[in-house]
Image (cartoon, rainbow, N blue to C red):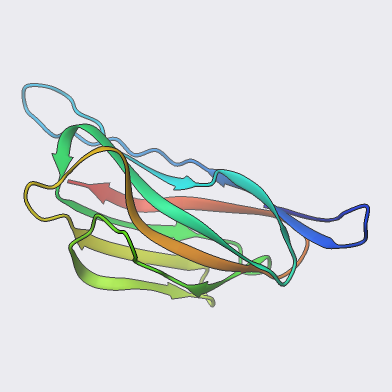
Amino acid sequence: MEIKNSENKKSKISFFILLSTFYFLFSVLAVQAATLYLSPASGDFTVGGNFTVAVYVSSPDQAMNAVQGTVTFPLDKLEVVSLPKSASIVNLWVQNPRFSNKTGAVQFEGLALNPGFTGSAGKLLSITFRAKQTGRALLEIANSSVL
């Protein structure tokens, strides 16, 4: 993320999401891939203002049933305000999504019950951030798996 002063003297934050792509084997006969991604991929935001980034899964070839992961964020630039789960493909949360503004992490772990999810844009959860200061901030998906 990049936070900068705009020409009209409003402080802004820009963010760029490192799209960490994770591939997993779904079958012995063929290799199938699932991808976790964040949307939107970039943006400019006013310091002190809130914005929302959604965590999605793409599993176009085979149904996914379980997902877990961590979204990391820079503590000096951002803080999490809330984790709305509305319109999620996850039917059962193994643990409710949680965040720490002390470690800069959002963790999630859930199940998409039978028949699972097949498609390119399965919304898992949303993360509402508050921009704290100007500069560049990088969001990253880490320690994740899709089954």
